[in-house]
Length: 199
View 1 (cartoon, rainbow, N blue to C red):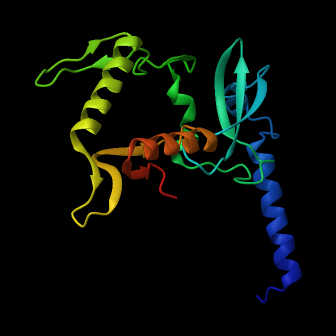
View 2 (cartoon, rainbow, N blue to C red; view 1 turned 180 degrees about the horizontal axis):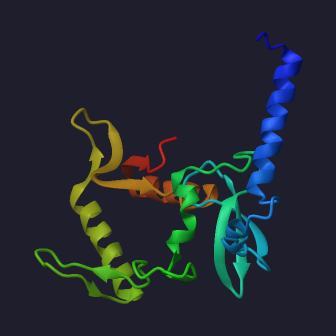
């Protein structure tokens, strides 16, 4: 049987229509009707936002119901990702929430909400307050910088640097925040500067 382009398109259209009607259970399939589940996004408010994982800036739609994010998906109207998300962006809801056995969102028990500190040689983490953590970090940075600061290199060239500290930028920060962090690192004499996204 010779198949023309016109008859191929007719056959393809007929097959697509039959598959659609079958999937919609328009033939009175009671089993398909019984398996119907209500949409989780029903009555949820749509909030557009930007993904925080890297510097690309993909658009995400968050669906919020009763103050809880119940779903996230790519924003099809966003000019960068046009509705698609990478594996990190697709799982962004799991930063805060996971689903229980009944499919309802609950707070992620693995999310850290307090600073933890593990002393050198210790085998356990202990909770500390933010003031103690920030003071300790600042003091250690200053001690390391003072101990390792070079004004001139071996050839007598003024370098004003420390090679004992490295700075890793964050994709969770905005461009402006990373700009300020970069300026701060340079002001301290840090020359080993990198970024986690490496795009």
